[in-house]
Figure 1 (cartoon, helix red, strand yellow):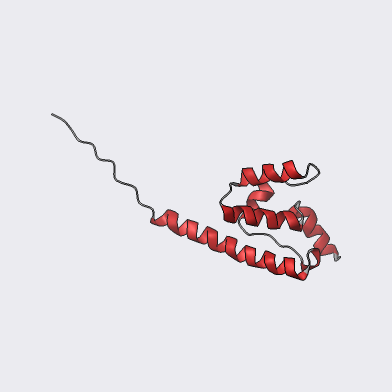
Figure 2: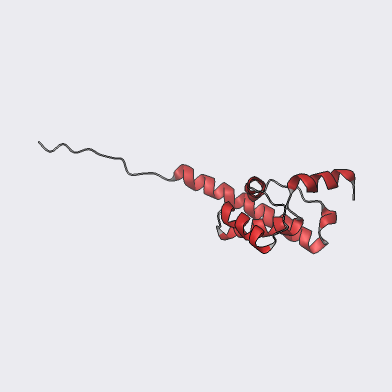
Length: 108
């Protein structure tokens, strides 16, 4: 592997399979702390950090094609685009969500 790829993997702290797991769980609607706990529960030797799981859950992660088979890499790219779409839709829904105004009624 290229030196740049190795540095990228070390900074990420999650392996490529864990990145796929994070994407799948985000699309199921799980919170990042639950995903982090599940990763740690399944693999005590995982170097996953809570903050890294949060960053990766946004879809902001680079996985080199050499880390996965071509089918898995295609699947990862598909998941990433779904995660971006998921977050984009959630952001739009939050902006358009309206609250009922709070009205104070004086009883005299």
